[in-house]
Length: 195
Image (cartoon, rainbow, N blue to C red; front, top):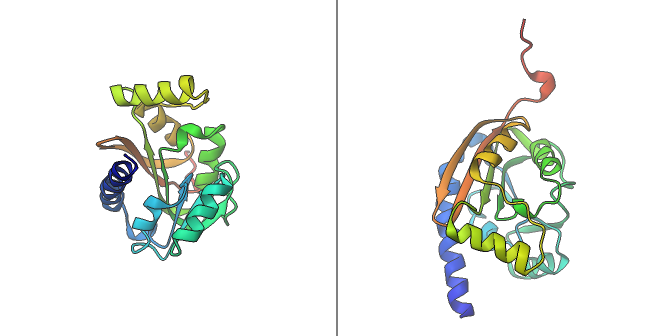
Protein backbone atom coordinates (compact mmCIF):
# COMPACT_ATOMS: atom_id res chain seq x y z
CA UNK A 1 0.00 0.00 0.00
CA UNK A 2 2.84 2.43 0.80
CA UNK A 3 4.34 1.96 -2.69
CA UNK A 4 0.98 2.83 -4.25
CA UNK A 5 0.73 5.90 -2.07
CA UNK A 6 4.25 6.98 -3.10
CA UNK A 7 3.37 6.44 -6.78
CA UNK A 8 0.18 8.46 -6.39
CA UNK A 9 2.15 11.30 -4.78
CA UNK A 10 4.67 11.29 -7.63
CA UNK A 11 1.89 11.33 -10.26
CA UNK A 12 0.15 14.16 -8.43
CA UNK A 13 3.45 16.07 -8.20
CA UNK A 14 3.94 15.60 -11.95
CA UNK A 15 0.56 17.19 -12.60
CA UNK A 16 1.30 20.01 -10.15
CA UNK A 17 4.68 20.61 -11.77
CA UNK A 18 3.01 21.06 -15.16
CA UNK A 19 0.35 23.42 -13.80
CA UNK A 20 2.88 25.45 -11.79
CA UNK A 21 5.25 25.78 -14.73
CA UNK A 22 2.43 27.01 -16.96
CA UNK A 23 2.10 30.10 -14.73
CA UNK A 24 5.77 31.10 -14.52
CA UNK A 25 7.10 34.31 -16.02
CA UNK A 26 10.65 35.60 -16.38
CA UNK A 27 10.07 37.77 -13.29
CA UNK A 28 9.19 34.70 -11.23
CA UNK A 29 12.38 32.74 -11.94
CA UNK A 30 15.37 32.68 -9.62
CA UNK A 31 14.53 31.54 -6.11
CA UNK A 32 11.49 29.35 -5.40
CA UNK A 33 10.17 28.92 -1.85
CA UNK A 34 7.79 26.08 -0.93
CA UNK A 35 6.03 27.13 2.29
CA UNK A 36 4.94 24.13 4.33
CA UNK A 37 6.78 21.93 1.83
CA UNK A 38 7.37 19.00 4.17
CA UNK A 39 10.20 16.76 3.01
CA UNK A 40 10.53 18.54 -0.34
CA UNK A 41 9.11 15.84 -2.62
CA UNK A 42 7.39 18.38 -4.92
CA UNK A 43 10.16 20.96 -4.55
CA UNK A 44 12.73 18.45 -5.77
CA UNK A 45 10.83 18.07 -9.06
CA UNK A 46 11.25 21.82 -9.67
CA UNK A 47 14.97 22.09 -8.88
CA UNK A 48 15.86 22.09 -12.59
CA UNK A 49 13.68 25.15 -13.28
CA UNK A 50 14.90 27.61 -10.65
CA UNK A 51 18.30 28.88 -9.62
CA UNK A 52 17.57 27.94 -6.02
CA UNK A 53 14.76 25.94 -4.41
CA UNK A 54 13.95 26.12 -0.71
CA UNK A 55 11.45 24.47 1.61
CA UNK A 56 10.16 26.30 4.67
CA UNK A 57 8.79 23.74 7.12
CA UNK A 58 8.00 23.97 10.85
CA UNK A 59 8.40 20.22 11.54
CA UNK A 60 12.05 19.49 12.41
CA UNK A 61 11.71 15.79 11.54
CA UNK A 62 10.56 16.64 8.01
CA UNK A 63 13.34 19.19 7.58
CA UNK A 64 15.98 16.66 8.67
CA UNK A 65 14.50 13.87 6.53
CA UNK A 66 14.36 16.08 3.43
CA UNK A 67 17.83 17.54 3.93
CA UNK A 68 19.32 14.02 4.04
CA UNK A 69 17.58 12.87 0.85
CA UNK A 70 17.10 15.92 -1.39
CA UNK A 71 20.49 17.56 -1.75
CA UNK A 72 19.41 20.00 -4.49
CA UNK A 73 16.80 21.50 -2.13
CA UNK A 74 17.58 23.85 0.74
CA UNK A 75 15.58 23.42 3.95
CA UNK A 76 14.70 26.09 6.51
CA UNK A 77 12.83 25.42 9.71
CA UNK A 78 10.23 28.10 10.30
CA UNK A 79 6.64 29.18 9.97
CA UNK A 80 4.60 30.93 7.29
CA UNK A 81 3.79 33.70 9.75
CA UNK A 82 7.49 34.63 10.17
CA UNK A 83 9.42 33.67 7.05
CA UNK A 84 13.17 33.99 7.78
CA UNK A 85 14.08 35.24 4.29
CA UNK A 86 15.09 38.70 3.08
CA UNK A 87 12.18 40.69 1.68
CA UNK A 88 11.83 40.92 -2.09
CA UNK A 89 14.10 37.95 -2.80
CA UNK A 90 11.75 35.13 -3.86
CA UNK A 91 10.63 34.82 -7.48
CA UNK A 92 7.99 32.12 -6.95
CA UNK A 93 6.31 31.08 -3.74
CA UNK A 94 4.25 27.91 -3.65
CA UNK A 95 2.31 26.28 -0.85
CA UNK A 96 0.75 22.91 -1.57
CA UNK A 97 -2.09 21.67 0.66
CA UNK A 98 -0.61 23.59 3.59
CA UNK A 99 -2.41 26.95 3.70
CA UNK A 100 -5.36 25.49 5.64
CA UNK A 101 -2.91 24.54 8.43
CA UNK A 102 -1.60 28.09 8.96
CA UNK A 103 -2.98 29.40 12.28
CA UNK A 104 -2.94 33.02 11.07
CA UNK A 105 -3.60 32.98 7.34
CA UNK A 106 -3.60 36.77 7.05
CA UNK A 107 -0.16 37.07 8.67
CA UNK A 108 1.09 34.29 6.36
CA UNK A 109 -0.12 36.17 3.27
CA UNK A 110 1.56 39.37 4.48
CA UNK A 111 4.83 37.48 4.93
CA UNK A 112 4.47 35.81 1.52
CA UNK A 113 3.97 39.20 -0.09
CA UNK A 114 6.95 40.62 1.80
CA UNK A 115 9.42 37.96 0.62
CA UNK A 116 8.27 37.94 -3.01
CA UNK A 117 10.06 40.09 -5.57
CA UNK A 118 8.00 42.71 -7.40
CA UNK A 119 6.01 40.77 -10.01
CA UNK A 120 6.83 37.51 -8.19
CA UNK A 121 4.32 34.68 -8.43
CA UNK A 122 2.23 33.22 -5.61
CA UNK A 123 0.70 29.78 -6.17
CA UNK A 124 -1.47 28.36 -3.38
CA UNK A 125 -2.62 24.80 -4.03
CA UNK A 126 -5.50 23.83 -1.79
CA UNK A 127 -8.06 21.10 -1.21
CA UNK A 128 -11.49 21.96 -2.60
CA UNK A 129 -13.96 21.36 0.23
CA UNK A 130 -16.87 21.77 -2.18
CA UNK A 131 -16.06 18.29 -3.49
CA UNK A 132 -16.79 14.96 -1.79
CA UNK A 133 -13.06 14.23 -1.53
CA UNK A 134 -12.43 17.65 0.00
CA UNK A 135 -15.23 17.33 2.55
CA UNK A 136 -13.89 13.90 3.53
CA UNK A 137 -10.37 15.29 4.02
CA UNK A 138 -11.70 18.22 6.08
CA UNK A 139 -13.74 15.83 8.25
CA UNK A 140 -10.74 13.55 8.72
CA UNK A 141 -8.36 16.35 9.67
CA UNK A 142 -10.68 18.34 11.91
CA UNK A 143 -12.95 15.73 13.45
CA UNK A 144 -11.14 12.41 13.43
CA UNK A 145 -7.61 13.74 13.99
CA UNK A 146 -8.68 16.64 16.21
CA UNK A 147 -7.13 19.31 14.02
CA UNK A 148 -8.11 22.94 13.65
CA UNK A 149 -7.50 23.44 9.95
CA UNK A 150 -9.20 26.42 8.29
CA UNK A 151 -10.22 25.25 4.84
CA UNK A 152 -11.49 27.91 2.45
CA UNK A 153 -13.62 27.45 -0.63
CA UNK A 154 -11.99 28.80 -3.81
CA UNK A 155 -13.86 32.13 -3.80
CA UNK A 156 -12.90 32.82 -0.19
CA UNK A 157 -9.21 32.23 -0.84
CA UNK A 158 -9.30 34.34 -4.03
CA UNK A 159 -10.80 37.23 -2.05
CA UNK A 160 -8.38 36.83 0.88
CA UNK A 161 -5.33 36.85 -1.43
CA UNK A 162 -6.63 39.95 -3.24
CA UNK A 163 -7.02 41.82 0.07
CA UNK A 164 -3.31 41.39 0.78
CA UNK A 165 -1.91 43.38 -2.13
CA UNK A 166 -1.74 40.67 -4.77
CA UNK A 167 -2.94 41.43 -8.29
CA UNK A 168 -4.10 39.35 -11.25
CA UNK A 169 -5.60 36.87 -8.76
CA UNK A 170 -7.08 33.90 -10.60
CA UNK A 171 -8.15 30.33 -10.14
CA UNK A 172 -6.88 27.16 -11.79
CA UNK A 173 -7.90 23.56 -11.15
CA UNK A 174 -6.07 20.29 -10.64
CA UNK A 175 -7.46 16.79 -10.39
CA UNK A 176 -7.11 16.98 -6.60
CA UNK A 177 -8.09 20.56 -5.79
CA UNK A 178 -7.54 24.12 -6.91
CA UNK A 179 -4.75 26.66 -7.25
CA UNK A 180 -4.97 30.36 -6.54
CA UNK A 181 -2.42 32.13 -8.74
CA UNK A 182 -1.47 35.75 -8.09
CA UNK A 183 1.26 38.28 -8.71
CA UNK A 184 2.81 40.48 -6.07
CA UNK A 185 1.52 43.96 -6.67
CA UNK A 186 3.50 47.14 -6.05
CA UNK A 187 4.31 48.16 -2.50
CA UNK A 188 1.55 50.32 -0.97
CA UNK A 189 3.83 53.40 -1.04
CA UNK A 190 4.31 52.86 -4.80
CA UNK A 191 0.61 52.75 -5.64
CA UNK A 192 -0.64 55.63 -7.78
CA UNK A 193 -2.57 58.27 -5.87
CA UNK A 194 -6.07 58.99 -7.17
CA UNK A 195 -6.81 62.67 -7.68
